[in-house]
Structure formats: C-alpha cells, structure tokens
Length: 286
Image 1 (cartoon, rainbow, N blue to C red):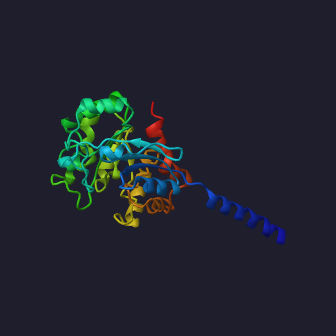
Image 2 (cartoon, rainbow, N blue to C red):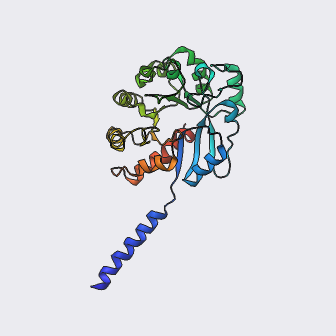
Image 3 (tube, helix red, strand yellow):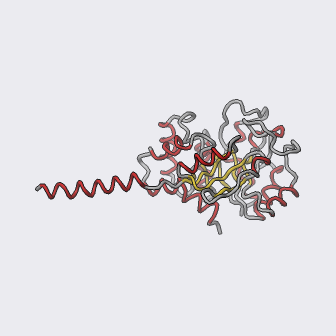
C-alpha cells in the first residue's frame, strides 16, 4: 500500500519541479524606448524576453542593437503629432517634423535600420488609419514586406497630442487601407479596446490580421476580471493563433503574470500568445 502511494507522489513532484523550472520565452511585440536602455533590456532578458519590436524617437532607436541575448526589431513612428513622441515628448526626428521624408524612410529600410512601420500614430494625429497621408508609408511596407503596427482603442492621460480622437481608433476604419494594400501584413495594437466588437469583426473579416494585447494585460489600467473577460471572448472567437504579447513599457513581470493567471488558457495557448504567434507574424511570413 505504501509503495502505491509513494510512486504517484514521486511523479507528481517531478512534474511540479519541471513545471517550475520551465524556461519562459517571451516575444514582446510592443515596446518603446527608455532613457536607460541597458537597464530596460537587461530586465526584459531576465524575465524571459528574447525578442522585442521597439519603436521610439529616431536617435534613440538607433541605440537599440541586437545582441546574443536579445533580438531587436526596430520600428518607425509615423506620423508624430507636433513632432513629438506621445507621453515622453522627445522629438521623433532630429528635424522636428511630423512626417518623415518618404525617400529617407526607404533609404533607412534599405540600410536595414527599419524592420517594421509602427507605431502608426494616426489616431493621436486625429486622422484615420486609412487616411491617404499614410499611403506612401504603407506602400513602402508592402514593397519591402515589412509589418505595420497600428494604434487602436483609447489612450492614457498626458500624452501631449491635442488632436487625439478616440473614435479614430476604431479598428473598422482600417478597411479602406486593407482594400488598397491587400498584401500588407498588419497588426492591431491594444486589441482594439474599447472597440472589442469592432475589433473581432475586423479580425474575422481579415484572417491575415494579428493583434497585440498590450495595455489589456496591464492590471494597473485594465482590471484583471475585465482582461479575463476580453481574452475569453477573443479565444472563443477563434483568435488564439493571432494574439501576441506586448508590454507597452509596463512592468514586464506584471504583464507576463497577467497572462499566466488566465487559467482557462492551456499551456499551448499561452505559448502561442507569449512568442509563437509573434514568430509566425514577424519571421515566418511567406
């Protein structure tokens, strides 16, 4: 009788040990610059992050370099309301312009300094993501097969963008642009909240769309019960293969834990969200 009891306990202990020691892998698909990037990147790496998609002011952007510990994909803010990065308010570009010269952008792409177009800040500028002002940049992204990340949903306080319009963050506004650029690889940032219904409609209508869940997984902004509810809807709608983790500069351990605590997700689903979907989107696109 004692042997029958010891064997199951032994195997249970092994399983718990292996689960505890499992190396967490995280691809952060939504990150911004930090005044002390070395400290920021070290903290990310210490918490299982091995790849990031970062967008910040152009001078700071160039200081982010891939290392043996961390793969870095660099984006391009466009447009920059009143020439500044929202919230941090440093100049996007050294000349202080809101819209970077398209010829210059193409040259940076050719020099491998830009890996994606984003964060697209049309909402902070007060216009739609399908505004024709963005078309030259979308055309470049399509030409060079670069992903495009578009801000959707709401914004926090003190962003410093007087023309910000929440209604311009409705994911449905993307339709005209996707019709114009059908080959463009796009991800919607922040899961569209509070436009969750519209977000789901776009995701189901456009099977090539991906999304990151940054801000949603920040319990200091979105209560855990609300995050749980939104994620259940996303999963029930069949979106588990197109949701990507993002921190948006929130505490990495806190945002990772928020996803880990979604008990209705299987381990396989969590791995998709933490890194597998992002690898597919950024690295394994045909």
